[in-house]
Image 1 (cartoon, rainbow, N blue to C red):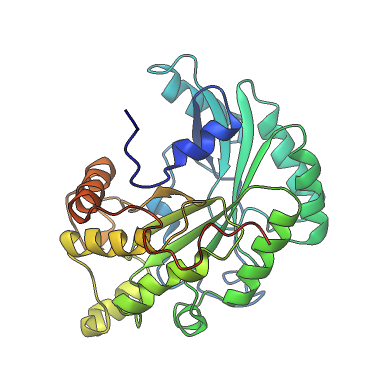
Image 2: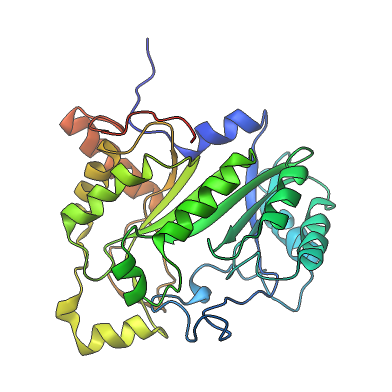
Length: 314
């Protein structure tokens, strides 16, 4: 009996690289961002509050090794044979001198049972020298570089104070993939000014890129951000999806996304005390089942309407 195919999930991607189970452990290495420190801007992205995705063990006063050991202890109680990926997550994790980056990455890989790196960064913060180093590193350990792309619209990127263009994302993704390094991208669905058709059409563009993984999540209004103030002043400027709407939006998006790209997630959950809206009360695994149910109802799947097809890396 053939296995049901609905979408390419992250486990499919991991199985290509590992013969055993791996778990990401978040690391906060004390980075900042160029649109926070004045290099290209101040204030950061209007939606950003890094408290929404930093686990308790991620504290900048702790070393990379200490954070990883604490993360391992947390997971090992339930999964004693698990191996780990050091996930450099908070802010821009390539925003430092190359020698400093080497020190941090090598420290992480020296921790027992850490078998690779996942590096979250911006597309305007990756030099060719850094990518050459990561390509060399990838010869002896797993490396995945994740870029915060967020949207294909330069108008939206400017509106949310992102500080880079979509073309810079395309360039960084292609330069990374050309070196044989797995590449991921992050997109926020529902940014202000983007309607349903514009959001879904992004899947066509993404399918043309040499991406391996993709993270999606709904726009969330988080306390302590500039966007929270904008939302309170002009709520009519925002379209915050109800959970049933967002399920349909994700299904539409998946239908037009090439099967070559593994989708790691559809949603994100900000801490209750920080979240202003939308508050769905739905856990990530529950939302995944809702998407699967919708695809089954439609009798469709990821790539069903993909106009780009399963394009190869450029």
